[in-house]
Amino acid sequence: MTKYKVLANDGIDQIGKAMLLEAGFEVFTDKIPQEQLAAHIGNYDVLIVRSATKVNAAIIDAGTQLKLIARAGVGLDNIDMKYAGMRNIPVVNTPAASSRSVAELVFAHLFSVCRYLHITNRIMPTEGKERFNELKKTASNGVELTGKTLGIIGFGRIGQEVARMAIGLGMDVLVYDYKQRNFDLVMTFNRKYAINNFKITLQGQKLNDVLSKSDFVSLHVPGGEEEIIGAGELNMMKQGAVLINCARGGVVNEPALLESINSGHLAFAGIDVFEQEPPVYTDILGSDRISLSPHIGASTREAQERVGIELAERIIGFFN
Image 1 (tube, rainbow, N blue to C red):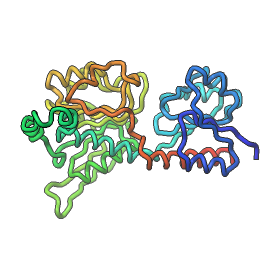
Image 2: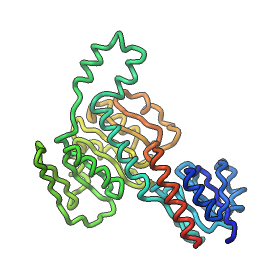
Image 3: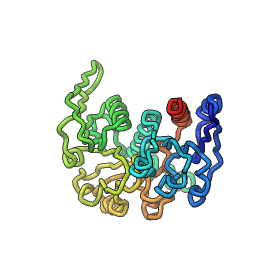
Image 4: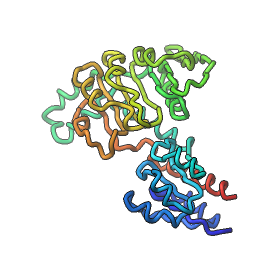
């Protein structure tokens, strides 16, 4: 077969790379900076990106040999899909590979804020001896997830995985789905040894209902120009509620979120993604009521291996 050239500009797991090499592809993994990519992309048949590389119209135009663009992840907001379509260049992604890892990070943030771990881990290394009793008193106000209501905004693969975990923890789940998919089933989980019945309602929920009735809200919507959670939506949320964003930067108004937390309306937040990365609005990084992570939702070893395998299978299948 023709030696097709693949540029994995944001990297690819070694197993996926090995699969491509075995299938006869040439695979290049040296990172080309964004500002230099247009000058080099014309040498490649396939471009693989994660979230760092932006595939805009200029890069697509410069990719005179491009036959396929592949996104190692779920979202496609860093790729100009419309222009790729105009140029008849297919775009594929890996929608199933990282759902579990993102969902687990949601609960990592939830457990962290509910038991004040994000605060005690900041203070104890330097002031643990002097403030031990103070921190113990503060963290003793922690809450359990069981019996609480989790609102899920966006119910694709990741949102569904979050719901499964929530139900396993004994939470009630409310769902608002932006794509208005028709979930016509109401599932009731009644377990012999459970304290409560667990319900997940997948139909007829409005955004304001989910926001106002949930103790915790987790976002799982695609990125884009539209802001999903601004000051108005934050005000709809329960007093003392928690917002988790492991979806996309820009869907939450960061200054409005910080204001809501500082005013005491929201108790905590967990943030993995930011409007700009690295964050430009650094005020949000200093709050001791926000659990932070540096955009690592899909970045577990297991997820990256699954992503690499799925990418390799899609690329090989495309050319076969």
